[in-house]
Each structure stands twice: as structure tokens, then as C-alpha cells.
Image (cartoon, rainbow, N blue to C red; front, side):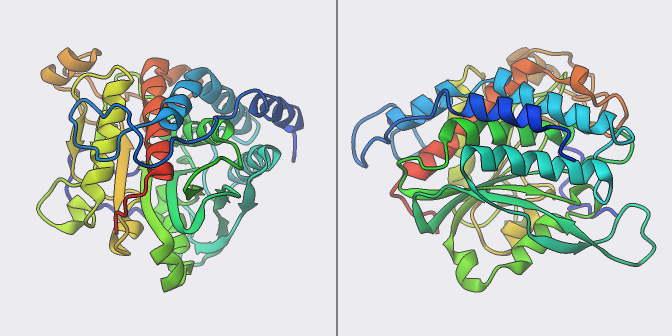
Length: 363
């Protein structure tokens, strides 16, 4: 994550040692895959606000119930191991990043997803004007309407200063856990696509390169995008982005507020009191917003301080930063708040399932 919470301006900043782990993940993937979705129009409960639109049926409830922080921690442990074996980080353009790409791709292929690693031109941290190829990881279900894509993404790179386990290993791990429990061939109405972007910490280059690589027709197929960046900070909060602000750069395109409300409702269902919805501040969602795609965001805060009201609602320490290890070497596995992670994983799974089975059009 490259911005401070509440900053309204986008800030553009400048092998297979894990085969055993992949076998373990594959075995886990085979144990539980969610069942059939509820047909459109059947009854279910809405979120506490009652504003999320389509009622949530058994498919939403089951996927949200099957995911866990324990499953996500398996992937965070693997990412920590990658960083430890590659100079202490997973920064774009390094061996640690390449190993992260291979790990994520391997997990998804073992589950049965269609996986690609499209390249883009990216400038690294120490580059003085040249460019080097970077790689994203893109995976999607084999089922669902290819003309109606529900997309969720996180960034796969860390800063050079540390392993980036919360920022944004936590987002990566959440997506892998959701993909594992969803399975590659779920009975869904809309195709689900998972994205893992490189060079986020160096000017959002991976997400920008991905969006720019798509044709106008392919962009129109993306029904929505949900960005996940930092969801396990030790003093983290429960924050959602979409539909708030004074212009489209801050609010996202029409439909963004609906995504944010569904995610907020799912957080409430997971046991969170009063999640906050805020404006976008310039992370990997930016390219999708600029392309006119309805967009939402999940984050728990970074270097700013938790307020007294937030601490009362969510727990944690008022007057202390959300993550004291933000962009530092101490952003290791020990930095993870599993309670925060667990709430977000369940809420994100419920949100993905909601839109994957929803007949409603956001655009």
C-alpha cells in the first residue's frame, strides 16, 4: 500500500523450493469447496443496513463460513519463507518477487484455475530511467458468464525494506484462501477473476499495465473490481472504500457505492461493529476507476492513528498508528492481527459470492 489513509490525492511513487507447500495447499483445496448457489430471487437475509440489494443466499453464507484466518495464515507463512530466503523482501524486480509469482501461480493451478502471468513494462526501485518486464498473476474460474466478470485483486510485491506480510501479503493470502474454498468450477452466474499485481509499491505499474493491456470489449466485461490492500495490521480498523467523496476519482464510477455497501454489510455479518466507508486515496484501484469500472476497496489503515471512536467500536489502541511496521523490516508474520484478518477474509468471501451469484448489473 502506498498511501496514508485519508489522503485525498493519489500518490504515485516512484525455484520451486515450495513444492511441498503446494502439495499441502492442494490437499487443503480438495477438502472443502462450496456447493450450489441459491437461484436468483430466492429469499435470504440482507446485511444490517438493508441496502445491499440482492438477498444473500446459501452460497454466500457457505463461502463466507468456509474461509478462515487459519487458511490465510498458511499462505502468509509461505510468503514469509520466500522473503527470508531472498534477502528479506519480495520487492518487484527481485528473486523474492519471482518466487512469489511462482508460489501463487502454483497454488492456483493445483486448485484447477486457469492461470496466466501476463507481463508489463515496469521501472524498479533503483531504476534510473530504464524499464524491465514485470509479471502479474491472473486466475479465473472455468465457470460463470465470461461477459460478466467479478474481479478481486491485491498487490504481490513488498517494499525493499521488508517482507510485506501485512502490506500486502494479507491481501494475497485472503484471495488465495477464497479461491481455494470457491474452487475452479463453482456453480456461479458470473465468472470470478483473481488478480495479483506487481510494482504497486513503485507507482501502481502492474495494475496500470494490466488495465491498459485490455481491449475496450474486455474492459466492458468486467462487472466490478474489488481491491484488497492491508487487512491484518496489529492495530487495524475496518475500512471500506467506494461511493464517498466529491468527484469520481474519490468515489469511483457509478456502482462503486453498492460494492462498498455490500462489503460493509458482510463485515457486520462477520461481527464487526460500524465499519467505515471512505473515499479512494490512490492504490491499485486507480486504473480501474479511470477505466469506468465500478470499484470497491478493503483496507485496515496504515501509518495514521486510530481515533478514540474507532478504538471504542473496533478495539485496539486509540492514538496509536494502525500499523507500526508499515513499510519496515518488522512487517513479518509476527505483525499479523489474526482477528482483523479473519473478519476481512469472511467479509471478502461473502462479497465475492454475492456478486458472483447476483443477476444485478452494476454498469
